[in-house]
Image 1 (cartoon, rainbow, N blue to C red):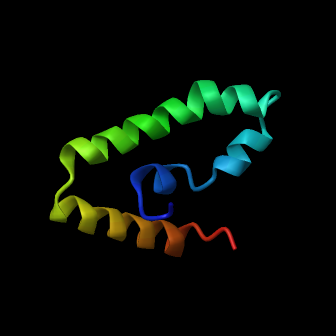
Image 2: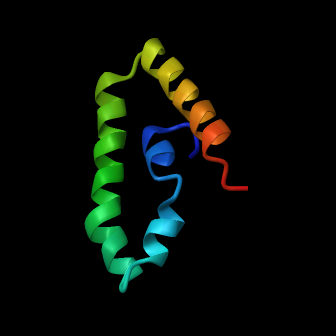
Amino acid sequence: GLLCLSGIYFMDEEALLSQSDDPARDYWLKIRPQKLALDMFYIDHRCFLLKIAIVWMALKARLFNPHD
């Protein structure tokens, strides 16, 4: 989702994969492992301050890097 670390970090996932010769392979070998690592980081470190930081990062990413 948009309010998770991997959602924020890979907001431009579609653009990244559109530049690939093999988008499915690159997703499974490059992007997916990074997303899982970010999700595991959140699970291991979840707290109120991290949630506030994620909301802030999502707002900042949406305001300064709008895709729509």
